[in-house]
Image (cartoon, rainbow, N blue to C red; front, side, top):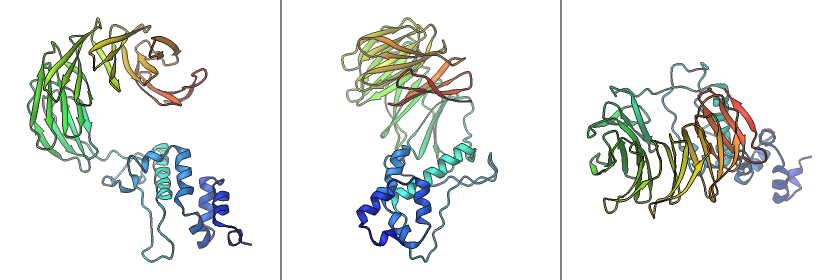
Length: 365
């Protein structure tokens, strides 16, 4: 007996929502009727939400992503390129959006898990070490010790344009809208129109290499080896604030709202108010240079060469937790509401719980 013939559609949907994705797929293979019943966005959206895959259908549309040219070989000697075969003549309705998203992302995750991926493009052209890059999704811009800025087509790897307006190593690149902002070892900041590749403006004032930049609205915040931060107005094309507080070079900088946090070789973090151009709080506790940091409205998380990760209360400043486990310098980290992920010179990535005892819940070598 086919239960779908006797129950209202709402009850059938309610029953199917209790099935796992694999069970729902098996259900859809039984017959045409069951396939049509299970081919609904509300059912598959639920599974995408459970997996945390919503961004693949909203922020970035995986359904419109073109695969890069197929390689002759790859690490697994199998093709990682997704192909969905759909007959030209079929009585089945088109596959719904969120089922399509789920299938493609599931395939993508399996590729990463099993090592089915390829390095398709090698971008060659710089004569010296590449020191900075950014991308807008279609085009990559790179900076080098050869003092040149190059634009590359991300689909085929062709060099589209070469710009030689810097007098020293390009240390930082930020692509924001139609503007590209660069930091340079010659102590200058340049703003370039990404459309016509013309320099719109430049800022001078730092007494050392500009190694860190963030763009907040119509303002640029820069940090240099002269131990200062400077805030520049893109609208008025002038310097707004000079901020001092660190006793050594700034090694990392990140922003959230109108605040910026910097980590330094002086082993401290500083929270700054960009609008007022003022020092807000000082955070001390690390024993070595602070290599990375990230923060939100309530907390700051930092990683250091002392091998520790620290969680700080933003205000009033206090170290809440110390996460120990890495056997080398912590070079990078990122967090969300559930976990912290950190990378280290010990060649591991560790995932830490954001709740409870903040234990390491996974280690990838």
